[in-house]
Structures are given as C-alpha cells and as structure tokens.
Amino acid sequence: STCLDTPNWKDKDGYGCAHYEGVYEAGCSGTEKWAGNMGLAIDHCCFCGGGSHTLPNTTSSSSICTEDTEGWFDQHGYDCVWYEVMDGPGCPKYGDQIAQESSTVKGTAYDHCCYCKNAVVASNVSPAAVAPSSSET
Image (tube, rainbow, N blue to C red; front, side, top):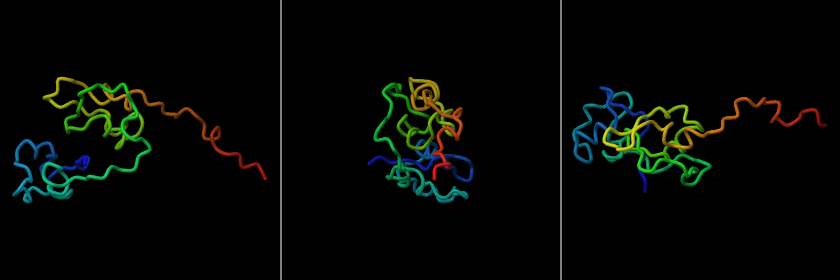
C-alpha cells in the first residue's frame, strides 16, 4: 500500500523526511537522538519505517483531475493526488510547494495540479443563498 510521510514533520534541527532519505540507510537506525517535539523519524517517515498507510477520508477516489502534469512531484515526493487528499480545493495550505530539485518538471503544485489551479471556491456566494429557509412552518 502507499505510504505517506507525516506532513510538515521536522526533527529538532528542522530537518524533514526528505533529509533522512538522502542521508541515512532505510530504517534510519540511530536517529533517535535527533527527535524533537514532533517525535521520531522512525514514526513519521516512510523511509524510516514510519508514516501512514491509511489515507484520510476523502470524497474522491483516485485523482479527480485529468489535466495534472505527468511526472511532477514536490520536494517531498508527493504528486497531485496527495494534494487532493491532504489540502482543500485550490490548495491553500500546500499549493506553493516546489518540485524536487532532481525533477525535470519545475514549478509548484499551483502550476501542475489542476485541483490546485482550477479549484472553484464559492467564496462569493452568500450563506443566505444556500441556507434552507427557516420561515417555513
């Protein structure tokens, strides 16, 4: 099954899971000394044996988009489907994440994930226009 690193996890020195994957061997033996207030890499990073194999509840199955840029991944290794699961329409939390340095496809999630760039946010709709009428008896 797919494994997801804990989003935004950092060790006591501010390093995330991508650092551990680049520096340590699989399993990340001996990294307990770097634990910070967010916990251990072995609990939060897939490469180290942690992470999550359960996707959060979502209303979409796989990708809801067909216009995502093939081959784009952010600096943490996440593709556009991750953004659909972990962020809201328009990707207000994570949409500014940039591509991995080694990627041939450059740019942010806003540039390459249709869920992030084409989201229709109904912020201009009055709540009264969608709320049921309370005057019916």
